[in-house]
Length: 289
Image 1 (cartoon, one colour):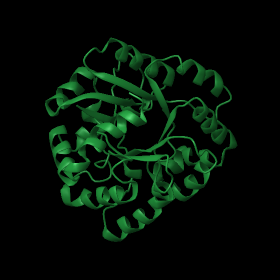
Image 2 (cartoon, helix red, strand yellow):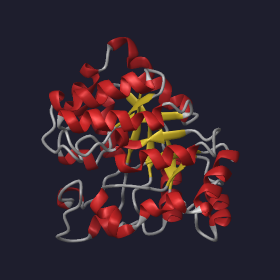
Image 3 (cartoon, rainbow, N blue to C red):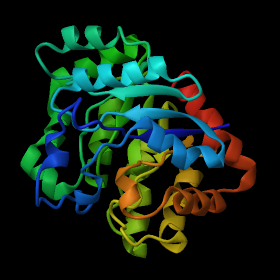
Image 4 (cartoon, rainbow, N blue to C red):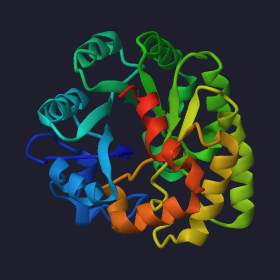
């Protein structure tokens, strides 16, 4: 059975997502209006189960209260009988109360890791300043602490931050890292992809760094097999079949395609002999199912 390594759920009456409910605000990934509604586990299962998925990784998604989101997901995980779900929660690694927050989160049995986004899109990052985390010694201390706890780190960033991030990660060699969304390549021209691939090697050479084939529609809203093939090919060349995972990034990527279109196209671009690793085993091992 297969595993979705990256998706989101939201219940708008349980958890507050300010970015999601902002009216009339187009984001780097497009217009969120069609997904400004509840997206619950049953709906996600209904999309994936026909393709023999039976487990998934929920990744934090910008809740106002990260602990409340993690608590809600942990309750879902506890009550889910036929679908195994674990989670990557939000925690501000540079916050003064980081140790208290991570200790509270660690009590959730479903917790496997942390995501604190470093980069979404360069224009947005210039406003939010999340990329400044790389220069904050408290952020590095936080990475070291979650590594000691045996937690993983989901790394979402943009290509202009690869080099600096690669240097930072040398300070935490034992930390298991998953690069979200193939590192968010934001253009599809041949020249851009070649430059992106060269930069990506700053991350892929690190043995404890994995990569998620996910979220490719966010910067390629009319994507097709031809436009994403070079990205998947470079990721396969650099990370190999033992350090790649498939993630749907639903419901965000449902803005661009159905799950069946997404899964079937990507599965055809990956050699069949690697399917067991990329669609199941790597994710189960990385997130300790």
